[in-house]
Image (cartoon, rainbow, N blue to C red):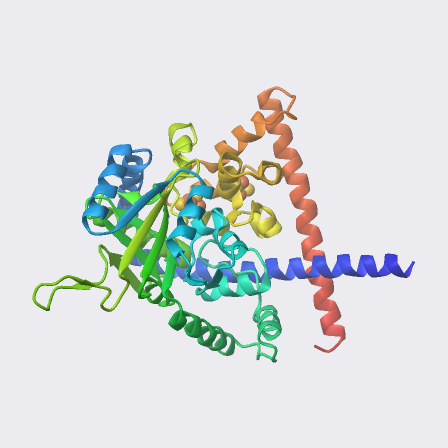
Length: 438
Ligand code: SF4
Ligand code: SF4
């Protein structure tokens, strides 16, 4: 009996924790949406920019000639370039580039999450320190992210202070300032010690042979400037014809991901640190890495680019579709697989990852409301892809139009039940807090 009671208490506390995380995530999303509304008028050519971005993506995705041009120009700029067909190949290239180093510092990258890089490096005894504040919190808490650019959006400052207190073995004040300062100081010590840094890339400009990195925290340039080596991992879908198109994407990505008009830092890297100031002798590694190594990862992207799901790769990872998705703001990251979140993430998981069962379950939760497509800067038709994948499942036995109608009704019934349960849990928690005089 006692065991049963404690089991049900545990269940309630997990439900409450999850509900609070979703509440915190919604609050963070609302901040972004408010900022977007305040700033949208300041991008006077927004529609034109979206059109240009769509054209650049149409031109680049699945364009083998453009990819070859990018590789050629990057190599001409002194950057070592590899192509990795699979996640295993990408991971083993990173391991061989790290060689006998046992510590690397790393910046936020959805691709490294996709290929499970951190876990794979840790499994061979390499310590990996995430240097993005949100990612470091997720790493310390053993959690999963809730937004591509705001991974810890679902955690309150109280949750984070608890995680950090356990990690540091001392009580951490639950204020944003105190938390950031403590994490920053710890990360800085690791950055100073590491000789190799790993980053993703926001874009690769083919014509210029350049890698573009965008960030607010300032950590990425420090990671990229480690003295020995900068390892960059980028999906082959990150190629843009030239710097102008890449910059246009970055402007839109910033606006849709954060509501801001610009991020604090934009780094364009087109070669390693070097000088020939002394008798024209070329010396590498002056104020930055001696070597830059870029791993272009396919991992099913070429197959997707050749398929009817090609449009999926136009995605710029802004996360706008999550902010507006009614399923995501009720289910949270249950409507996704690991770091592949929302409808887009689920479709991508089914097509490219080895987690189809979990992804298939997630697809069933989509409400077919089309809000993601309406708000996506590229108008990517995620709902049609979800519907198509649902119909392809062996368990679907009805005629397609009947099956679609059935899926629609079932998803809505499930959503209403979950939304009511979520609100009820939050309401009870509030009442309990009030009655305790909190
Ligand atoms: S699908 Fe569209 S809205 Fe969603 S992350 Fe990709 S580009 Fe952004
Ligand atoms: S169609 Fe599905 S994925 Fe898109 S916003 Fe609606 S519920 Fe979310």
